[in-house]
Amino acid sequence: MNPNRDLWEKGDFTRLAATMRAGSDAVVRELGVTPGMRVLDLACGDGATALPMARLGAEVLGVDLARNLVAAAQARVRSEGLTNIRIVEGDAMDLSDLPDDSFDLVLSMFGAMFAPRPL
Image (cartoon, rainbow, N blue to C red; front, side, top):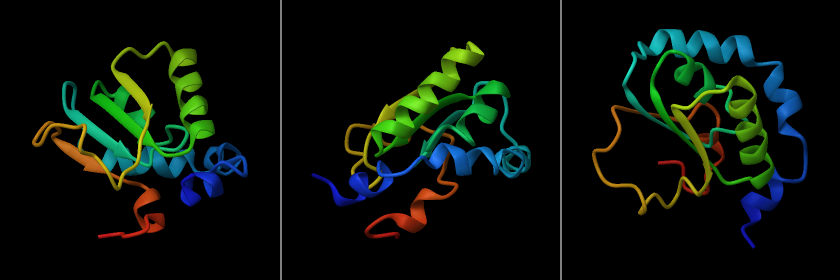
């Protein structure tokens, strides 16, 4: 078992994330995301920054360690009918499955500070 996963799956972070949506939208506006941009959102949670980037036309991959947050983000994607975004379970500390130089933008709104080795 991954202790970080266990921690993030204990509570309902989606309730807290809902209170921060306006801030996430503001950050995304400042990033200059454009249609077709390839974006990786690490520790994407329930999609607080991933979904706004997809709404702007970016091709988004969201990765999160917590299965409950991945499921919540996937449900939000489905409810909005977005087809240019994928949310998958994964560990930001091991991105070996992703090819080098495959994204135009990589970000982590909150997750990097909680990583075991936040480099």
